[in-house]
Length: 335
Ligand SMILES: NC(=O)c1ccc[n+]([C@@H]2O[C@H](COP(=O)([O-])OP(=O)(O)OC[C@H]3O[C@@H](n4cnc5c(N)ncnc54)[C@H](OP(=O)(O)O)[C@@H]3O)[C@@H](O)[C@H]2O)c1
Image 1 (spheres, protein in one colour):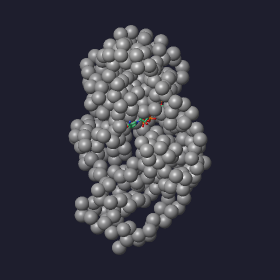
Image 2: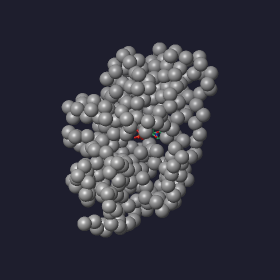
Image 3: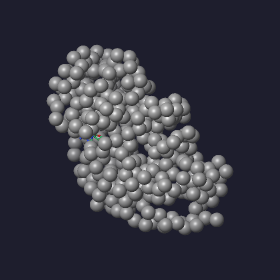
Image 4: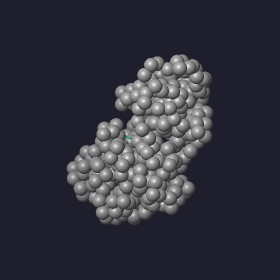
């Protein structure tokens, strides 16, 4: 029998202007009515917080968005709490677009299994989830990083950057992190295995790059936009590759990346690729098959910044958009 459940949710109170603030969000109890026949009710365990959500709450993420009053969307790991579907029995862990709330109902085709053999389910939101798949798409599929190459990765210790660094090292490349602050540089070098770290707030980026790699940069995995994009692109070696993946600098609406003049790409004989991770869903199974065993064997570092309780999501998201996170931001919503 289906029932009405209390459901705590975070809604958008107002569209932020510039950097988001916690009072742009509100925590509300929104009882969830009876589950419709065929739907599966899920109880959120872990919620992923990601920079793209800034565009969603601005009303424009790849043409989609939400309005004030709506629950903030987001990917979650959840436990099935009510179901009549033998393929999705009560108690199993699933990945779905549950949003910033405790409970959500889904059609079975909107659910995915969390890889079996995963001792830490939240990894399916970080290095083994969407950010990890993004890193694989950029470093392995598009840039085809190889032995002896020099790879530069900004937002170096975040969800995408952490996996991008580890994939680049596995390919035999030298990795250069760009991040902010001494603690993040320590994490980059000591925990994630980068070879070098540049502090974007302290160091002169152009000077630091040419000192570390006078021969230039083979691959730049752009996760942030200008001015870092233009500065690193100017130091590309001939035949260098640039993967355009994120524009966090622009998401708060107070900056517009233009990038380098196209003449630069010509001179460098560069290959520039755009990456949208949704295109890589068909490869997710193979990605999990390859990397879940490595993570379980301790050969990959999953660097999550864990917050406890749904009520912490607005503050954690605002800190993320200020670059103050020290890893992939995940909120533990249930046990
Ligand atoms: N195209 C796709 O399909 C796709 C998929 C996933 C992610 N992405 C993009 O990839 C990027 C990284 O995502 P993530 O989840 O891994 O985030 P993240 O690295 O965990 O967090 C964002 C980081 O961006 C850096 N940052 C913030 N403001 C900045 C600024 N003004 N200038 C330079 N850097 C700034 C900060 O790192 P530091 O303090 O270390 O500089 C911050 O910690 C985002 O732009 C995201 O939108 C794209």
